[in-house]
Length: 237
Length: 158
Image 1: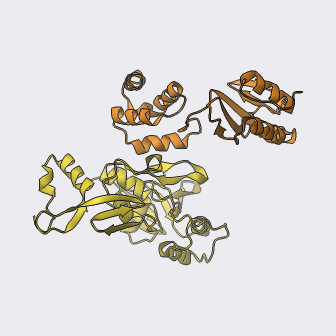
Image 2: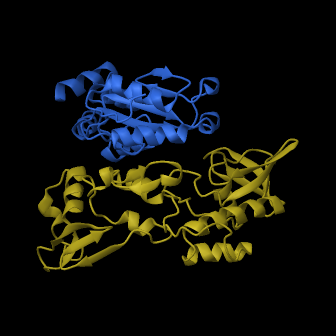
Image 3: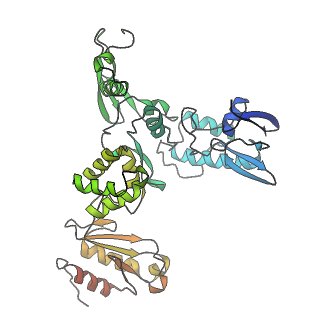
């Protein structure tokens, strides 16, 4: 059992294990902090800056991203001060400039009372939360996609902007994306993610397409089991 | 190529922590981040190629395209700008027949603009292969280019 620390969030006394983040502690205490890039399956990252909170340690109050700031004894956290809300409004406006259509973003904007963004709308779609890239690296373990460029040219990219050689077509990036930016479809035994095609495997027993061939090859590689073992779908196994 | 890349990686004891210095050496060796070389680095160090691509596109010092034998960097900072750098930029672009940020097809010249070289007193300033040419003028750019490349045709000599 980890050492417990006690802190206050919005005046509420909370005990949380040392090493957890403010966001986790708040979520456990049913205190809502909006966030987009944080995912409990992934290492804390701090990209979207929506989860900013005001903390007081000793004399000074300052703003931190609650998804990367760890709880500490005697920490005083406020999640709803005017200062915090101002920052969040600005952040959501910046995010709306990248994507002003998606319901998830619109919902957060509504909560904050933001109707429209003052910034030119670029409609890029992707909000650069990095969940796809991090999932591919941390959960799937293949790191097929990454970022390219920086600043205004930063985007999620495949190596050399070509079909990613390490991709196993698992679709985790599609699943995890909070704004459904990465398209995926399955048709006639071919799964298409972004614009790249991956052939699917037919189940040896029922004859249904059930998983991408590359994913099964990857399973076979990491488990050291013969590929045939995976060529039967879960239902028939 | 395999041995050359291996040599660079050995220099850093196969340590993934030295990715940037390794890529710098690869860039020095091949003049740019050559794709096969990156694939070799990826295979030797067991670093995903996506991560190398990320680094290669993040830092301006890295180039994924071949660079010219001569590198020209023209300062477009405020002091240089007011002293007529845009005219010199146009002149160099016209002579090399490329836009700033590009490389000539014969791989002789790479011409780039930079935002400030911090040598405003010398402005307008052009750096050619690490050598600073201060108090630049259009005629000076003509002379510099002529000295560097015989293939470069200069119409007006001054």
